[in-house]
Length: 173
Image 1 (spheres, helix red, strand yellow):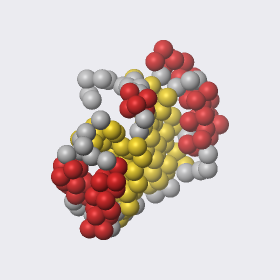
Image 2 (cartoon, rainbow, N blue to C red):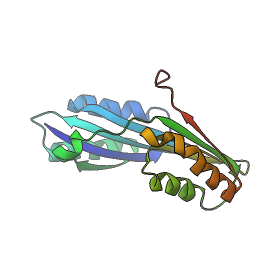
Image 3 (cartoon, rainbow, N blue to C red):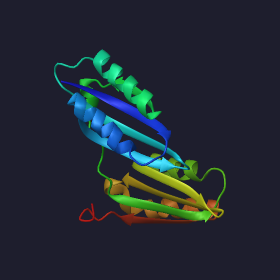
């Protein structure tokens, strides 16, 4: 059994997820993990798909080339090693939100503070709305969650932004 990481992007429009899912269905490729988003009229998705035993990479690439021609999407594929397939992503246990005046370095300062605490970021979303910078990230802090508030307060003061950290309620997911 082989696994492939697909990175897909293009101009946003209704039906992209359907088109990709339909192509995977026709290939009997199972979509196991995915992340998708639209940003300023562009669409991006990453998928980990499990290919059927009898399918080679050349057959997959031919089908993806056809999907690119039909849809205008750009698709890259990367085979995954057994080690990569067996890795699990840490489950997020907290949400960090940032609000404040848009300025250089916000993502760096927050991500650096988390990295220095050994905290893994699982998902990040950012945007600027009418000059206000908004960031939401999910992280796995584990037993470092209690110290995180103090570390983020220092970052908030340095950047003059509001930063909040909340324990993620697993029942919501």
